[in-house]
Image (cartoon, rainbow, N blue to C red; front, side):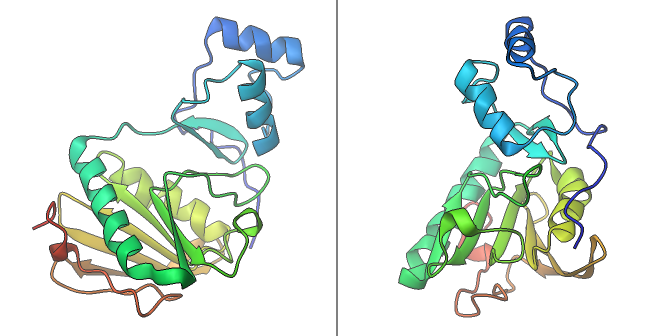
Length: 211
């Protein structure tokens, strides 16, 4: 899989404040620099050019603002996490709201991702992560298009978009040439299991917020 594409100029880029932009320039990193790396982002935080609490992710070398989360999104995400963590056992790790490093210039923050406990967290990449989940409200269009392209391009084999309003999961599998060749939908009362963890099925209707 190709690990680099043109910068994501049509995504909502983070707007650095004048003070942050000045710190960037003083450090030798121009606001318009392309592409930024994840190490650059960590350096921005260290020098005060980026608030560590800012809701951003690194996509194709650009610092991108994440869509705001409404309460239905937050509730669904937490209940998904609780359901998966309570049944995962020692063999599976469930990560919430944390950076997934796909390459040096792409590090999105999915709502959840799962990986085998035998793997080291800092060794994960798109090909080795077991499952990526995005919980969608206002971000549905982006999660189904731009995010799907990013995950497919980096070899994520199992990507789920949980559409809270429509009470369904859109499953993306079999990444080929930067796109998923297999898409299907699991309705709220249908169970679906991750490819990497077949003993961990999920049914949305089991979650109080989805019922």
